[in-house]
Image (cartoon, rainbow, N blue to C red; front, side):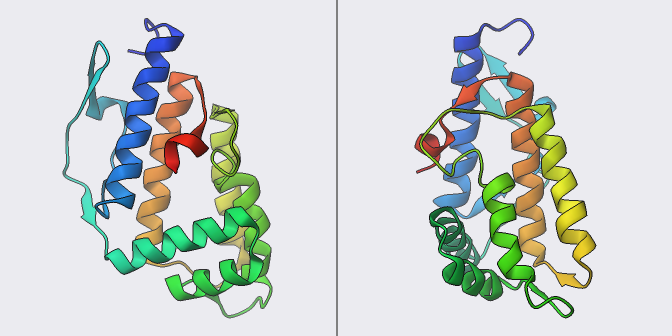
Amino acid sequence: FAPQADEPERKKIAEIIWKFHCEAINRYAIFNADPHPGNYIIVDDKVAIIDFRFCKAWDPTFIDLWKKQTLAGCRGDEAGFIQLTREMGFFTTNDQNFLKNLLPIYQDVFYRPWISDRNFRITHQYLKQYLRTIFEKIVSAGDVHVPIEFLALTRLYFEVFAIMAHLDIELNYYQLTI
């Protein structure tokens, strides 16, 4: 689809895909964590999502905590972010400042597409930074416990981000997400 589509077509498809995943998570607490290009059928300005073998329904309490954690992080509410991150099940036994140091990482990398009301282009370079951050700053921090639900969420966002990079389009993710 992307190579032959013009920019307005790619933008429309990107908006549909982004909104679908945001609504599935935020409203219904479900997701399809296998959103690669082969699992979408695109005809004109319509998108069909196929292959729901890796779907998960989250506990609504987890989704509520995650939304609150994200909002606290985007607002720069360090105390709220740390408390909600702990409530979600994150912890480490060897670095007392890990959660405090996590906030600027989230703001700079994970929240960057939607932290403010402006256009953002998810690129392949951004995806490399996303992965590098996970492994260099989070996994390398040592004995870090990450809740299993969050690992699936990270996979989902990375794969949706990869589709956005493939579509090579600027979107206002803030407006599409709220």
